[in-house]
Image: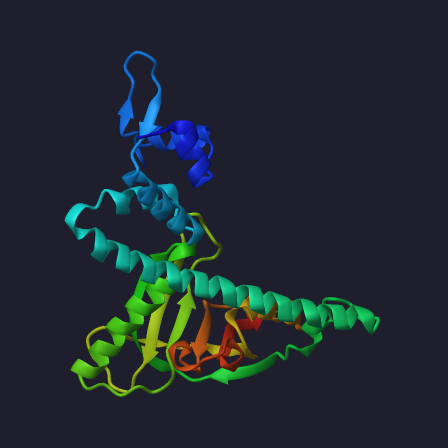
Amino acid sequence: MLSIGEFSKICKVSAKTLRYYAEIGLILPDQINPESGYRYYSIEQLKTMLFIDRLKAYQFSLEEIKEILHAGPSQEEILYEALRKKKRQLERQVQEFQNNLEQMDRDLTNLEEGKSMMSYLEGIDVELVEVSKMNLLWIRKTVGEDEFAEAYGQCFSKLFRRIAADQLTMAAPPMVLFHSPEFTPIGLDTEFAVPVKEYATGTRDFCPGLCLKTVLAGPYSGLPSVYAKQLEWAEKEGYENAGPLYEVYVTDPSQVSREEDLITEIFCPVKKSR
């Protein structure tokens, strides 16, 4: 048996942290002396502590680790799925860090050349276009801020299965419409849609009409800049919003190896201000 001090020294975890872990039921001492209250850990628990540290390094929360530890016979299956999900999250974070570093390099170059750090906005083009009526196969739901990646996958998979089952014909790339007037803690009123040629149960007409259009080449992190530029253009030219903003995904993100290869069209329905 190991005293809490010995266990703490070997695992490089403070005794205070071990007491907290015991308090939340993450890892309990193997024995507690009823007279002195001294806590002791078994040699076998070193492996458990190493397991906890490994998952913490993968950015699992203590609550997530506790659920895995107490999963019983299904622990390996649950652990495998949890690791797959966490791996995707970390890959997205790594890509975001890489995008930030590349953007930082561009900002440094602009500053070295005496330009504003925000001068990249000048390169975002906005055009006024007339968009014809389209027939949408759609799913509409409220999506939380941290649920978009999962919702995109689930909703579009469901729509594509329906297209295949009913032998419908896609008329244009998939798109997402944002119906919420503003962001709320509950999430955004979001419509996932695929334009199709045939009218069928679950389809509807969508008539965007006059729209501001911008083509974004690169990661989705550039979308807020596009929205800002479109709003600036609309105010300057005397237009106001006339319908839900929507994004058209010209390239399938699952089919590109680099976010720089993504092509997204952003549309903002407008009308002349009074």
